[in-house]
Amino acid sequence: MAGVVSTAVGYAGGETEHPTYKTVCAGDGHTEALLVEFDPARLAYEDVLRMFFREHDATRAKHKAQYKSAIWAQSEAQREVAERLVAAVGPDVQTEVHGAVPFWEAEEYHQHYLEKSMAKRGRGW
Image (cartoon, rainbow, N blue to C red):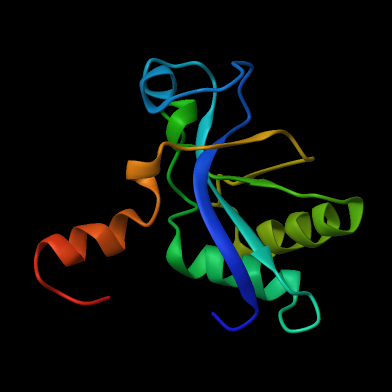
Protein backbone atom coordinates (compact mmCIF):
# COMPACT_ATOMS: atom_id res chain seq x y z
CA MET A 1 0.00 0.00 0.00
CA ALA A 2 1.53 3.31 -1.05
CA GLY A 3 2.52 5.30 2.01
CA VAL A 4 3.26 2.31 4.24
CA VAL A 5 6.83 2.65 5.49
CA SER A 6 7.12 -0.66 7.34
CA THR A 7 5.18 -3.38 9.09
CA ALA A 8 6.01 -5.79 11.89
CA VAL A 9 4.13 -8.66 13.45
CA GLY A 10 4.04 -8.81 17.21
CA TYR A 11 2.00 -8.80 20.37
CA ALA A 12 0.11 -6.08 22.26
CA GLY A 13 -2.29 -5.60 25.10
CA GLY A 14 -1.09 -8.07 27.71
CA GLU A 15 0.81 -7.68 30.94
CA THR A 16 3.80 -9.94 30.21
CA GLU A 17 7.01 -8.16 29.25
CA HIS A 18 8.81 -9.66 26.25
CA PRO A 19 6.04 -12.10 25.34
CA THR A 20 6.71 -14.98 22.99
CA TYR A 21 4.41 -16.92 20.71
CA LYS A 22 4.38 -19.63 23.38
CA THR A 23 3.30 -17.27 26.20
CA VAL A 24 0.66 -15.64 23.98
CA CYS A 25 -0.78 -19.05 23.02
CA ALA A 26 -0.80 -19.98 26.72
CA GLY A 27 -3.08 -17.00 27.41
CA ASP A 28 -0.86 -14.23 28.79
CA GLY A 29 -3.43 -11.64 27.65
CA HIS A 30 -1.58 -10.39 24.59
CA THR A 31 -3.16 -10.23 21.15
CA GLU A 32 -1.34 -11.05 17.94
CA ALA A 33 -0.90 -7.63 16.34
CA LEU A 34 0.44 -5.85 13.30
CA LEU A 35 2.36 -2.60 13.69
CA VAL A 36 1.96 -0.39 10.63
CA GLU A 37 4.28 2.58 10.23
CA PHE A 38 2.99 4.94 7.56
CA ASP A 39 3.77 8.35 6.12
CA PRO A 40 0.77 10.58 6.95
CA ALA A 41 1.74 12.92 4.10
CA ARG A 42 1.07 10.04 1.68
CA LEU A 43 -1.52 7.90 3.47
CA ALA A 44 -4.31 8.90 5.84
CA TYR A 45 -4.81 6.97 9.07
CA GLU A 46 -8.44 6.46 8.08
CA ASP A 47 -7.29 4.69 4.89
CA VAL A 48 -5.05 2.39 6.93
CA LEU A 49 -8.08 1.46 9.05
CA ARG A 50 -10.28 0.98 5.98
CA MET A 51 -7.74 -1.55 4.71
CA PHE A 52 -7.80 -3.22 8.14
CA PHE A 53 -11.56 -3.67 7.91
CA ARG A 54 -11.34 -4.96 4.30
CA GLU A 55 -8.68 -7.55 5.15
CA HIS A 56 -9.70 -8.57 8.66
CA ASP A 57 -12.83 -10.28 9.99
CA ALA A 58 -13.82 -7.72 12.60
CA THR A 59 -17.05 -9.59 13.41
CA ARG A 60 -15.34 -12.63 14.88
CA ALA A 61 -16.15 -12.84 18.56
CA LYS A 62 -13.09 -13.11 20.74
CA HIS A 63 -12.71 -16.59 22.17
CA LYS A 64 -9.15 -15.88 23.26
CA ALA A 65 -7.36 -12.56 23.75
CA GLN A 66 -4.75 -13.87 21.32
CA TYR A 67 -7.17 -13.51 18.40
CA LYS A 68 -9.39 -10.59 19.36
CA SER A 69 -9.99 -7.75 16.92
CA ALA A 70 -8.43 -4.58 18.30
CA ILE A 71 -6.96 -1.25 17.32
CA TRP A 72 -4.38 0.48 19.52
CA ALA A 73 -4.57 4.15 18.57
CA GLN A 74 -1.41 6.18 19.11
CA SER A 75 -3.19 9.49 19.78
CA GLU A 76 -6.58 10.82 20.79
CA ALA A 77 -7.20 11.90 17.18
CA GLN A 78 -6.50 8.36 15.96
CA ARG A 79 -8.74 6.94 18.66
CA GLU A 80 -11.61 9.18 17.53
CA VAL A 81 -11.17 8.08 13.90
CA ALA A 82 -11.04 4.41 14.93
CA GLU A 83 -14.16 4.67 17.10
CA ARG A 84 -16.04 6.44 14.29
CA LEU A 85 -15.10 3.76 11.76
CA VAL A 86 -15.94 0.89 14.12
CA ALA A 87 -19.39 2.41 14.62
CA ALA A 88 -19.82 2.94 10.87
CA VAL A 89 -18.88 -0.63 9.95
CA GLY A 90 -21.89 -1.95 11.81
CA PRO A 91 -23.29 -3.52 14.94
CA ASP A 92 -21.68 -6.92 14.33
CA VAL A 93 -18.16 -5.52 14.66
CA GLN A 94 -16.28 -6.91 17.65
CA THR A 95 -13.26 -4.60 17.27
CA GLU A 96 -12.07 -2.98 20.49
CA VAL A 97 -10.40 0.44 20.38
CA HIS A 98 -7.67 1.15 22.92
CA GLY A 99 -5.03 3.74 23.58
CA ALA A 100 -1.35 3.12 22.97
CA VAL A 101 0.31 0.18 24.70
CA PRO A 102 3.74 -1.39 24.32
CA PHE A 103 4.22 -3.38 21.13
CA TRP A 104 6.47 -6.41 21.39
CA GLU A 105 7.90 -7.61 18.09
CA ALA A 106 7.30 -11.31 17.41
CA GLU A 107 10.01 -13.80 16.74
CA GLU A 108 11.77 -13.54 13.38
CA TYR A 109 10.06 -16.62 11.97
CA HIS A 110 6.71 -14.80 12.27
CA GLN A 111 7.87 -11.74 10.30
CA HIS A 112 6.74 -11.72 6.65
CA TYR A 113 5.20 -15.13 7.24
CA LEU A 114 3.06 -15.10 4.11
CA GLU A 115 5.97 -14.18 1.88
CA LYS A 116 8.12 -16.91 3.42
CA SER A 117 5.33 -19.45 3.05
CA MET A 118 4.79 -18.58 -0.62
CA ALA A 119 8.54 -18.72 -1.29
CA LYS A 120 8.72 -22.22 0.19
CA ARG A 121 6.02 -23.28 -2.25
CA GLY A 122 7.86 -21.71 -5.16
CA ARG A 123 5.34 -18.93 -5.62
CA GLY A 124 6.08 -15.24 -5.69
CA TRP A 125 4.29 -12.71 -3.60
